[in-house]
Length: 343
Image (tube, rainbow, N blue to C red):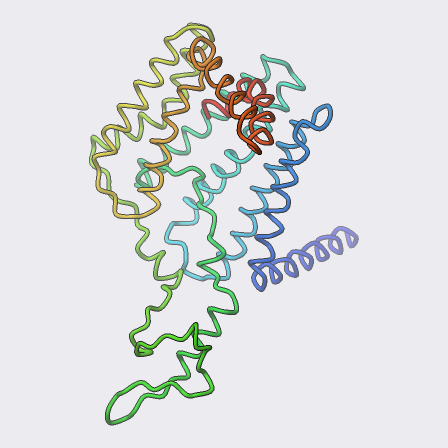
């Protein structure tokens, strides 16, 4: 029992040390996350089972971002405006989205096609139930992907240059009678970088806490709530149609596209108040192009044209072949992964 307690104490101390490092060095942790993600790109296609290993490393990089962001958010008290139960649901949804491709690959490797489709169905059911709970119970508005948006380390955690500049502004002298703001000579910057306006008139970077206070989701009317529910339930309808009609049938493709277009048409008329909501609508409009890459449309119409265009660019445009040829090799693998196409 003493050995278990000692082990727990060591893990706790290690976690506290790592948390302190992340809070003090957000830029360095962001560089570490980028390095892990880049490594996942480099090992793809290099050897047998490299796609599974690459996806594992990529999922690990996303989970590392989620973990580090949770540490940074704890240091910013009152930064989150959601309840603890809602935050747990968002965390579970984010973890599922980050590992769903790897789970699909692993299930196919271990249990074949039957196990693969079973895992896909369970993941989609779990995601749909949690999103419906967020929509109807917590009134969370439109659902983003990923559910917990990663922090922008560059703007929300300013570096030394920004902090020194703010310190220089704080060092300004304000006259008691005239109220004029005067900079001391010691805080003057170089001639090229100098700003000639009054110090009090310079725009200040808004703090993360102030930005989060205005991040309440835009309320949805009943028709818009129904449209969002249709968008959430679309993957389940598509899976059901696949099971009933088969992979080569046009019905799953047409029904899924009709549901997604109708949901987008209703929500696109809504004037959203937050930037993250407008960004989500732009993402959804871009994802409509994925129907050109989804079977059976891709197999019958898009595949030859896309491969011809990539081959043409690779052969005649210098440097494009470094990207186009690996992309052509990876397209068949990409087509086989359900969550790449329909997730």
